[in-house]
Image (cartoon, rainbow, N blue to C red; front, top):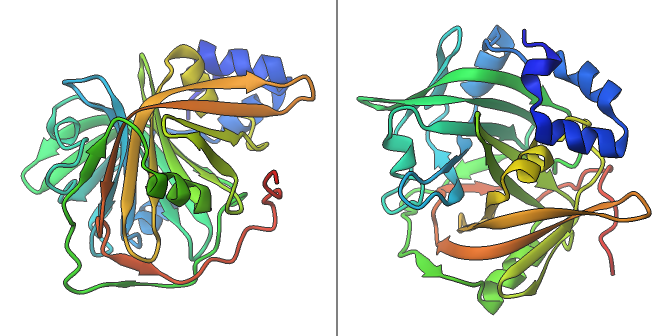
Length: 299
């Protein structure tokens, strides 16, 4: 088990102190470990989806990517090792990073059926069948702001379409973002990478212009790993999924947190590049039941 000194770097500590939650963060931080416990290993083997976040070694841009497979494609293969069979689809912006020895990678397995999620961060090692991650940090998060989706099916014959790439969001992509109830965010710092989840009722993310997104940072577990990383390094990658059609919208850019006098936090994201891939994910999930913790989005 790590000490809280190991868990948090200066960026996270600065946000915790500004919000006044250092004590709560220290308490939560004691749950972060290096190893994959049996209950976590069992959880991983049930998942058809894993989201990975990292920086592209060529451009330095941070992306979040969906990885899918038959349950068991992600599994613990050692006390501190998670192995993934397969990898990103061809042309995915993280393909190079997920094939490079030593890449700092953050992963999150989120199960809408049980509203559970698990995060594992570490260093990547390519393998003959995919890649493995040697864990630096392993921890679970509470179900707050997770939408329940009771079931999924794997759609036979669904193959990724041609990616649409651009330097800004189209009107259709902006509408996609504003209809979302879930997205994933990847961030980095000098010692590693992290992938996390954000959820809310549709409309909780806004796209006021083709090159900008904004969302309110809802109260969470007091760790401030994402906002702490952004305080140290503004690069970030976002992933929006259509849970019915499998379309994936990946966006990379920079994010900054604004603290309001009333105590709210709002993240403003500037778009650098976007990749939209139809049918990127072969999974079709049932309709969501929204989390009772979700605040109403602004009108």
